Amino acid sequence: MSDKYTQAASLIVDVIPRFMRALASDWRHDEHSPDPGHFRVLLILTEGPTNLSTLAAKLEVSLPTMSNSISTLVERGWVLRRRDPDDRRRVLIEITERGCGVLEHIRNVAQAHVSRALRDLSEEECELIIEGMSALGRAFDGNHQNPES
Image (cartoon, rainbow, N blue to C red; front, side):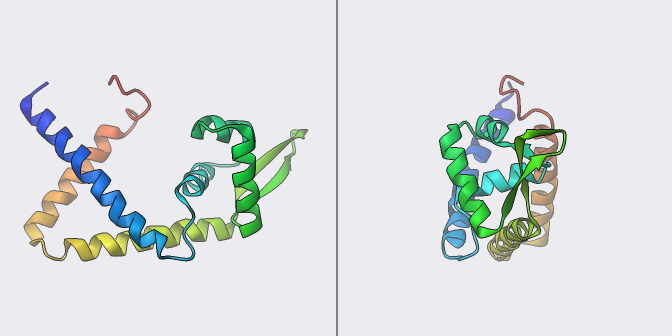
């Protein structure tokens, strides 16, 4: 691995936690923001309805923990439970319009926070960030499942 790859990886690993802490601080002060575990559930459900077992496996939590989380999200109106039309014994979990609205709100809060943080940078520095983040996105497209890649 080239020294530039190691340097880039080090910067990413150092900056992303600071970035996430700053966003989490904004989210904690926002009454409409879910806790991080619920946020991850909502994100997964944007891919389509799924069952409780699949959600628990993806988030690496127990079925009772996932069931409690889903109950909370149902109470908030962010997700709903419905019978699988192909197998009436199964229950599917899906995100509601309100849940999608919560995700959009969180995205807007995050974007506003980052935009404020970037205001002290020059246009050239912002262009470098655009290029770098685009490259980072390409690097992780399809590779996030295999840490050995």
